[in-house]
View 1: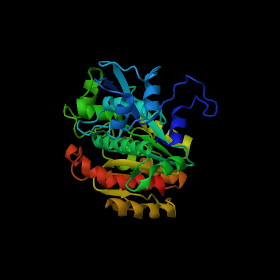
View 2: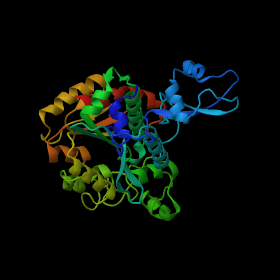
View 3: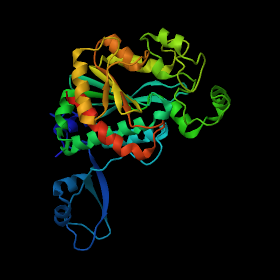
View 4: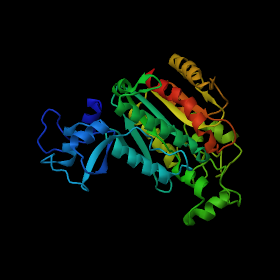
Length: 377
């Protein structure tokens, strides 16, 4: 059975204490599948073969008389969703992401989808929210354009979490419905949609000349990290931004490392900062590639809780925990400095960016424990 709280949260405009006959209720984690009636079929036989109640089939098909089944007629049967809908087979651009978010919202209507802002080119920067607990956890991916595999990994983790919730199954031995009731999870799966699309598909006609000039005349964008204006979004935050501006070698728009003309000059970075300011998350995780390590400190502003989480992340993933690196102006740096709460930059996989899709399954396996620990600890 689907947990009651998921059904209630999937039907927020309906009062569960005052249901009216004829009201349509959305049941998360199920789809209706057409079935063609065969000779000798009865609702009892169909239900027994598929472990379905007669009442459920009658409600779905609005049947007046269950004994009047005619061969060739179409019956709609409820089918529980147990398979992933987030693909790991194709490069993951903003178009695929948008389609998959719409699919997840249709299948799991208890999740909330919002646009927290728009990119330079007007693409929505989308947020997924799951759960209504007091603890608030935020995760994001694809700050850097050629790290688009992080979006795919994060979306698959979300998909696995949703399947576990609606099927009342455990996720790595964790009872996820408890997590749903205790934690509000915020996910921004693609911070830099323009940059990701540039890496995967090349420039559009409207900005082709500009980005090729930034790219020093090359029309090969596979190693591009910045947003579409040539600003590195993870060098945009007001945590000693001036130090990064002074010492970074690009002093103008570039495929990587240029911190911009001022902190938070780019709409993508500003959208992320505004999201954090508005919601005051208890901890944040930013997924990057590569190195199979993670960074969890900044200038001594990190609280003791950060070290506890870091040790657990290291244990469940095998990734190396690194407290400090000589870097400023990052999203994690700013969050730790501003809120004195645990923040992490997780470097998925190992190799040269962009990492190949052949690493996807290994990355997913190692980061599952971090994803869950970040929610339940």
